[in-house]
Amino acid sequence: MITTPDVKRQLYRQQGFFGERRLHDVLYASATVKAEQIALVDPLNRQELTGQVPLRLSYSELKQRIEGCAAGLVSHHIGKDDVVFVQLPNIVELLILYMACSRIGAIISPVPMQYQQHELADILPVLQPKAVVSVGNFKGKDHHQLMDQAVQKVAAKIKPPLHICVTAQAAENSLGFDQLMLADQQVLTQYLNQTDINADDIVTICWTSGTEGLPKGIPRSHNHWLTIGLATYEGNKLQDGESLLNPFPFINMASIGGLMMSWLYSRGKLVLHHPMDLTVFVRQLIEEDISYTLAPPPLLNNIIKHPEMLPPNTLAKVHTIGSGSAPLDSWMVAGFKAQHNIEVINHFGSNEGVSLLCGPDQTHDPEQRARLFPITNKLITTRLCHAETGELIEQAGISGELQIQGPSVFDGYYHEAEKTAQAFTPDGYYKTGDLFEIADSNYYRFVGRCKDLIIRGGVNIAPAELDNLINAHANIEEAAVAAYACDVMGERVAAFVVVKEGQSMSLETLKQYLQEQQIAMYKLPEKLILIDAIPRNPLGKALRYKLSEMI
Image (cartoon, rainbow, N blue to C red):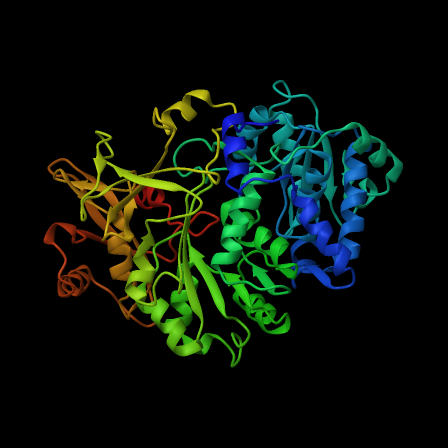
């Protein structure tokens, strides 16, 4: 399945972005020269997660397992353009499936472990998968049964898929993953001799976070991912043979574009982590000699606010940390440089193809690093337009929607022609829904999300700005703001706050603190709700609609 138009495919090849390599080609090249080097490491606590012993695979062992998985899929009549629907935590089998699907031309569609029967049943009829893959048990819960029930719920809408189960014990009505890999390799050889697998073929269908309405599928080709990955690898200053630690679920842009591709290019070691467990995370940083990782802003903020939470030398080998999914705080960026000599690189991305990065090559100023992104970008052409009128914005200080096009931008939503048409301008720019403004001739400044805007008395308020200010308060662990309805003003601002142990916070104290920051009065919160934790999606983004529902 190829979704990129021929004219774009030719253009991107001429520009040097697209080529002929598939994902597994890059990995297999590393396996040729680094056969005995450790390539992939299971979560340290896999026994607790799935009941199985953690694995450490060399490049040669990993390649062997990928070939076995590919042969197993083919022997069960799964091949080019067939969809393999996957719900697995960050374990080695998930990476094996990515590369096996790449090898045979199949399409892998991963979803978060948080998805339950409702979400699974929404997606299955859209995908029409030939196979579904689940884990037997996850943290004591039967995920094999969950997937089985979702398939049964939509049985009238799909053909019965092969159910593959990664499990310590045999699961009913499924094929064990280890059993899958016992297939005859000659079946794979014969299949590959008869099948043309193109670097422009779709290899993944990932899903939007689904914070508004149903999730939307986003197909991407080998060339899409390799183009994005090279830019991320270079932007994060990674070198050959580095050890990378991934705590984000391997289901979308943050982890695939930010970690999996960097691992392929760096030819180093990828250490898996799931879910975020600080004790395990710290042990992995130390024991695996990690030099690069991704981490959500709330975790990084806590490390600076609570230096005692990390044992000495935890970050001794780390030179760079990528962060994003929410606005960064300048004091956190400055703190990591001053206390640990670590560069925090600001990533602003989306499944659809936004690829903005701000690191030391762009600016050493913490305030700029936390909020600004270069206007010039080798992956995408960008512009700002008025969110309602579409008028081009060329003056500094005026908020507008970021619109993009280029080799990292997706071609359209899977089987959603109407939503695709709505997402693109007539001249082919993707409408990101992200608000930026021109800071100066070199930089954009992030303002917020179009759909996140709180509109109070007809005046727009960007929640991200308030989040940043409130999170810096010494008594606050984490916070986010959201709208609540008002008959007079339309909407007003509510602040949802998690206070530090032993501390307190009142609405008047918070308002006084914000006034000291010299912000406009209309932005001040008019409700304060103390809660135990900010609800977030798998990438760490605050779910503002859930906050609003609390009022």
